[in-house]
Length: 179
Image 1: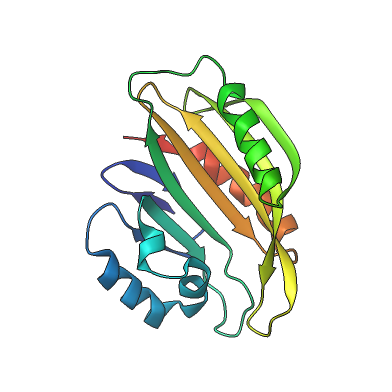
Image 2: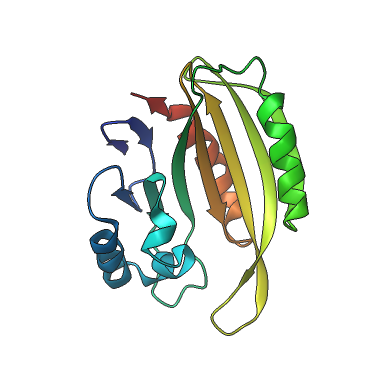
């Protein structure tokens, strides 16, 4: 299903719910989210963590699920400084992720998405379940450099769903269009 906002369009499977965060009161949006998808609300943490996010998609999961597979999209203006290569961005991000304790398993700076230079970073990070047990979450982040902005698409999945969702994430990222 295609989802469109004033700033972007992207395809996600029909069993994903979306939040267009580009307009509206983040407090009210988060309060609704706590009622409709407490798993995602727990992952996000609070309305202050929605700041700077334009779009959030979440795969529908049972209320007792330990993790909600999701996508968040952010945009960073390039302020008139277009990138000459994706390595300019990816190398420092990978270094920062490693400092934060993420395990980076792959980085590819040769992608093209929507006619723009793009990159992918594959990583995992620790995640604590409600019962206090630790697991890891798998992430795939796509960075897309348009002439004016760097778009960051961050997909996250639990270890038991990542294999099935990896091709979904790839197709979804390839469908992304900045408006």
